[in-house]
Structure formats: structure tokens, C-alpha cells
Amino acid sequence: MKTVKSGEITAAVKNLAMSASCDLEPDILDKLLAARDREESPLAKNALEILVANANIASREQIPVCQDTGIGVVFVSLGQEVTVEGNLEEAIQEGIRAGYDEGYLRKSVCDPVTRKNTGTNVPAVVHYEIVAGSSLRIGFLPKGCGSENMSGLVMLPPSAGMEGVEEYVFRKVRDAGSNPCPPVVVGVGLGGTFEKAALLAKKSLMRPLGKANPDKTVAEFEQKLLQRLNREGQGVMGWGGVNTALAVHVETYPTHIASLPVAVNIQCHAHRHKEIVL
Amino acid sequence: METEKQDTGKGEGFFQNLKPVRIPFEEGVLETLRAGDLVSLSGTLFTGRDQTHRRLVALLNEGKELPVDLKGQLLYYVGPSPAREGQVIGAAGPTTSYRMDAYTPRLLELGLKATLGKGSRSMPVRQAMKKHGAVYFATVGGAGALLSKSITKSELVAFADAGPEALFRFEVENFPAVVINDLQGRDYYEMVTAKRGGEEK
Image (cartoon, rainbow over all chains, first blue to last red; front, side, top):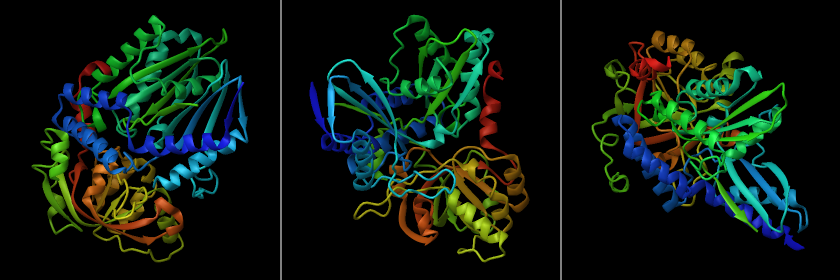
């Protein structure tokens, strides 16, 4: 057995929240540089130059990469041999609250009915998973909602097949236009049930950017979609060119014989994600 | 902008050859702008996003006076992050404009001359812009740290309790933007779409 104190969890989540908003991970920076190098449209190339410069300024001066520092999405993988001393959920929420306060991050969480801002950016949305082992893994994804709003879910008939899946995802990204801040990262959840597909789509965004699905057929599908999206011509900020998407991540789960759920979670180029293992 | 130029390596284009535009707008300037033009905005503007729009239109519906006179002004769709000690403002890039579409025609009727955000506008907004002689600009989404460098002063004007959604007055210098909708009714996003290959129509 291993014991983790709630104070350690709060401190870790606070650090994740503060650093995720100002310091982009190398995977996204590499993709932005590669996009800039292959871009053909002058205006889009300039926008990519600006995004690279923006990431440098953000990290150097600890200004958020984007003013939308998101609603916190937290993925907790709790090893079944780990005991948490104290209240796990409270420890996580307190870490988010402190990180957004001390990190000068925008508080963007409000009541859905009254639209009144909670003023603290809590509560975050926390997903728990019990896994084998003795470690506590915490992933943090501050989700901006210009992109989140462009997401969608459909329950396709099985007859639609993978062609139908491709068409739905393609149209979802194309019809989003410049709203979600392309070049986007496209998270796709395929299979399971209504809620499982949505969760898979979100979770796929935590994968190192551009890392292929281990299943060869799924990996080929990811590449096919990515290439089709980038041929489509919308490009960075909707200003044309060959970079509408930086990556397509597809996660699958077995589904019912009557069902083919497809969820598309769209993420902006300011793809902030961090993970820590306690 | 010297530092930024070094950071980008190349940096050509966006910070150079921009058409300088003063805000509020001088007589006849809007007529010269064309969809796809790169401009550099300097002067004074107001900010507002979802809550500010909702409240402005609620005040109008109640027959009350607005906290600001929008005649001839530019409204920037932004909800900035808080400033650290010594900073004018935190990150301050554009938010998605379509969420303001429901309110924009009412504000254009009052003489609002330009809006600034990201993403395309609804047909009713485009028609109202044409009718009232207003333009729409977009700037780079997700570049809030860099864009904050073009904001030289920030002052809270109204709706403080809305937090980041409050109405601020900004002074800006060389704030980069692209003309999306011009007075002739052109739409830059549509022009890009029209150029792309036929295979994905």
C-alpha cells in the first residue's frame, strides 16, 4: 500500500494549473513549427509565426498563452493500492482554485442557469478511473470553450460504417470554420455508449500529440482524416492554406450491435495539457 | 515589436505593411478598407463579450441609457485574464464572435462602426453592417499573450461584477487585424472558401 496526502495532491494540481496555461508542452510547439514550415498561404504562415512568438512570450513572461484559460478537466487514474489521506475531490478542487488565483488565470466558470461567475474557476470537471498498481496519475486539460462549443455527438446506424464516421467528423471540423481557432486537434470517441464516446473523445486529447492509435486500422483512419482535413483549404484561422488540423486522435471501445456512437471533441491550437504521477 | 520579430525568426507580413487605422474612425476611412486587408489599429476602443452584450441590450429594452456612447466606436470581443503587478493587462486575444450575433444589430443601430473578434458572422449581422456602414475585423485567436503587448492602457467602465466579461476601455497601439467584412458586403472567409478546390464541396 502507498499513502498520498491530500496536501500533496492540492500542491500538484495547483502547479499543473499554473504551468499548463503559460508553458506549452513540446509536442504542441513542435507541431506548430512543423505547420509553419509547410504552410503555403502567406497570411496563414504569418499567423503561425505569431503563434510561435506568442508561445515564447507566454512562457518567458508567464502570461497565459490564451486569455481563455478554460474550465479545468482533470483525469485521475488512481492505483488500487493507493490510499488517499483526506478528501481527494476537495484536494483537487482546492488545487484548481489556488492555481487560478495565484497564477493570474481567468475565472471562466459560471452557473449554467443564472450565468453568474463562481469567481474561482471551480468546480473543475473531474473524471476518475481505478487502475491496477500503486501510483496516482493526474492529467490536466484546461479546456477553452471556443473550441469546445464546436464539438458534437451522433448515434449513427451501424450501416453508416467507417465512411459515415469519417463524413461526420469531417463535416464537424469543416463547419466549425474559424470559430475553434484552427489548426485544431480533433479528438474522436468511437463506440461504447452515448457518454462513453464523449469521454473517449475528450481523453484522446491527452495522448501525446500526433501519436498514432496502437491499432493499425484505426491509425490509418486517423491519418486519412487528417490529410483530408488539411486538403480542405480552410487553414489557420480560416485564412486558407494546408493546416486546418494538427492531429486526429481516435479512441475506440466495443459497442452494442445496434449502435455506432461517434463523438468529436474539438481542441484549439493552444492545446494545453499536462500530467503528473504521484 | 522588435522582440517579437526576433522571436519569430522571420515575422514578415503581419507587423509590416499593415494599413494604419485610427480608432475611433476618421471620416471616410472605413470606405477604403477591403476584405482581406491587414490593418494596424491604434487609438481607443471598448470591450465586451456575452454578459456585456446581454446587459447592454437589456438596458436598451428598458429604455435606459448605456454606460458608454458606442457611436463611431469599435467593440472588441475579449475577456482578458488578470494583469500581474506592473502589467497593463493579462492575455487579451479575441473570443468567438458568433455568440454576439443576437445582439449586434441593435448596437449597430446606435452607430457602432466596427467589431473585432474571430470567426464568421451571421447573415443578419452582415446585412445590418452593410445597412449601417460598419466593418468586422478578426485577429489571431490563441495569441493573447502577444496581443496584450499592443494594449497600452486598460480601464474598467461598467459591469464590474461580470468579472472578465466586464466592459473595459482599452488604448491600443498597432493592434494587428484582418478585415473580414467590408462596406461592399464582401466576406474574407467566403473568399478563402471560394478559392479552395472543388473536391470537398
